Amino acid sequence: MENSNQSTFSFKKVLLIAFIAGTLDGLAAVIFLAKMNFTGVFQYIASAILGKEAFSGGIKTALIGLVLHYIITFSFTLFYMFTDSKIALLKQHFILSGIIYGLLVWTVMNLIIVPLTKIPQAPFHAEKVILNAVILIFCIGLPISYLTARKN
Image (cartoon, rainbow, N blue to C red; front, side):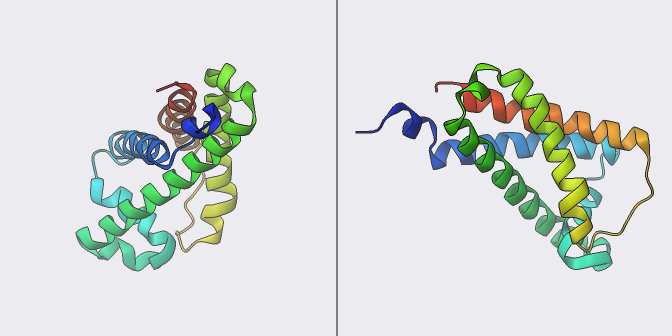
């Protein structure tokens, strides 16, 4: 028989929440950051492992980027759900938790992960940083925290 923590933390639930958050984040990036350029957004992500060649690889490298995007979102979802199963306060304050988690995701991605990849370094633009952080709060942090806090 499962206890309530085990039934809340299921692989199926992690996949579903990661799919929802990843889709929201990907759509927001395409709409707000790339002006509807689906291929460019996901080639950028693919450039993490392929370098500059990703930008000339067409739909093939965009699909590689899309898969990487969902793997990254799955990892962040899994981490949050694992942490949530250990810290009840996250469920009780899921809005604040989601905002903080979105900012944490931005920090980890931009200050730790991206610098370790082959992604070409871009010039700093404060507006883009703020927009990216807002997207991660509303499309990653809040959906993951809210959906994790839900009973069903």
